[in-house]
Length: 432
Ligand code: UGA
Image (tube, rainbow, N blue to C red):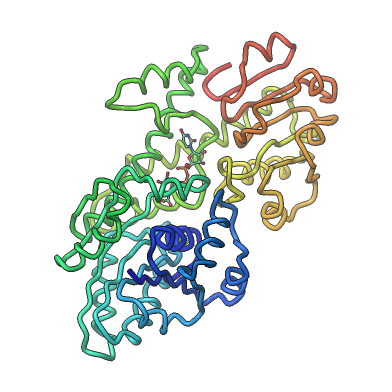
């Protein structure tokens, strides 16, 4: 098939590259000239394992092209995926101006039947607005369908997630739209859930909110564990091995971040309230997540006493491993708080240094080349992101270079018994 993807950000680029790899011809359109120039040269503006190779391969085969001409790209394909950003507004609602603009552009340029597919995460009833906008602005009297096909890929494993999904969700209102999308996903050989557009829109918000709920639930349980000296990792295992619950997303830590969970949770709360339902359960999920950072600050103070003038080594900045994404990353927030309280920070992350330097333009941060440089003379180490390369630590060396042997393990990566036996003062999340 010939497909146009409007919006070459994270989702758009991965979707485009993967559909091209499945044998389709894909036009990736974006009005950001700088980005399109970069992509045209085969350079990828984001860090995602395997994406660069996939883009290069499909570009070379002529199946993947990049353009800033959104109108022509619309005319050139029957299926148009809308992958533009829906950033959060101050009040937590999703800003849908990008979606509206694309809907108008599509309406003004279409000259034959088009299937317009929402892939960006949007609140329920956005599909209605898209349909209405296209009907108001279309300059040719041609048929069109709107569909919702939410994306469930995770940063860091986006290509694998796209190619091996647990399910594909298709929200459609016509048989024709359903048939086109089913044919497109057929090579993935997976269960396809066909529902209404509104149903698909709700599935996306509800999935992310449910996963966020699981994380906040185990974080809440971790607080009880800490109070009585139980270990949340074995509690989570004991809960999660019940197949009805499962062990995924039951890792206690410093809270969820990233560009999706915090934003989608707030947007779901907002749209529910707008529709007349107060989703207090999700408000609590959000509050527990924020509280995890307060608790981390308390732990630091408990182990090093006054934060002012302390030298603190921060291991990891990205909101999770295998990405350079620092959007809503707990580490960034915690560093800001520590600097405000007068600490000096030494930090290292294998991928997110550059982005963090741009974000954290504050005095008192030393950007280091590895975890040992961060720890030289430090009063405390805080592990923020569980990068694979942080798993293997030369603890003897570390103990020698630290001013105080204090480890705060924000992701429960290390063995508390072993570290305590070596003379470290250790605090994890939900285990002491
Ligand atoms: C998430 C969803 O997992 C994807 O299915 C979805 O498509 C995506 O949002 C999106 O809406 O675009 P992502 O934000 O890339 O994907 O990251 P996750 O791997 O889900 O992790 C989110 C956050 O939860 C991270 O900060 C991670 O550290 C935290 N987390 C995850 C925990 O604290 N504990 C866990 O057990 C699991």
